[in-house]
Image (cartoon, rainbow, N blue to C red; front, side, top):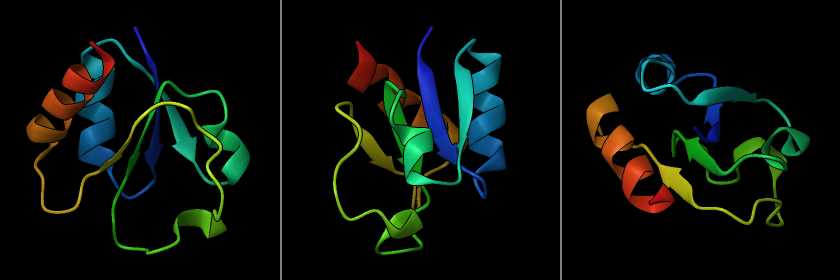
Length: 80
């Protein structure tokens, strides 16, 4: 399965993705995102973790206003 970086506040999303078999990486610093296939952000901060440049080649999903199930569906679509 995929290695997915998830912001710390998204515990329901983390749980749902782990149940699907994905490896979850807590996004605390810019370096945490470097080796992820996909990252999920809360959308609460305009400039997440002080990132100003792209360090991930994969998709970044904004979970703001989405349920954990909707985010999981987006992850599956982006990674397929």
